[in-house]
Image (cartoon, rainbow, N blue to C red):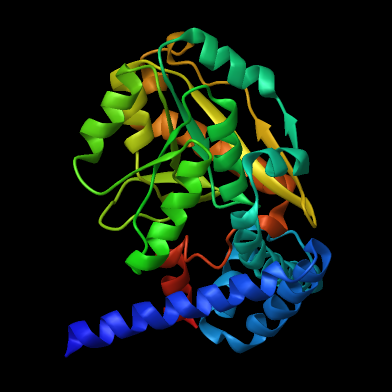
Length: 305
């Protein structure tokens, strides 16, 4: 019975997605953005638990910001993710050539430097702006595409749709089995592997500073870098407006230029989180503040009230 209900829910979610795709397909990018902004505006006050999380996160990260300004920022975060949710559906209808016309690239020379090194590399990103656009453009700009570490969606029907989109742009999803072996294999073949470390991992006690506070962070990227000796290229995708994006590539973090102590889990992971924080500060309304990133601190604050 439970399995039947799960299958029914998957089918319902899939058909709701197809309905949304049909509606978005009839709208201009500007109209889709307006609709998404409206949906986000409604979601923020209604979803009380998520509202509490975003309010706590913003106060923790921006204590110097006036409370009224933080409230405005929280509303804009919600509007942004409403827009991006519908925009993620819109771009599924685009060809690689069409998406290229909507994207401006900054720092492509940093990506070329890593490609020309010829020994594989990692791409560091975050749930910021239009991160799927960043991944898709990475797949187009890297000669053999890129592999993306990906936790499969709970709904396999929706997960198949996402994998088809990524494959169209030259990307491959990792994360179903033997992921460490797959990652090392890609790097040894001279490939590129994208990884996001901005969310709180389960069952990990390791912490790194993030917006001035300790945050549980998986040191997996630092460990892979130390094992392989390949560079890490930061990549972030920003939503600039309807059908307009900027994808940025940062200066590679090259382990060959770092000392032994700098390559340890703590210092190297802290460096990656500092890069991520700087990217978020460029457009703070575009990061996923709804994520319970500092859950232990939030729960401690709740107990003290």
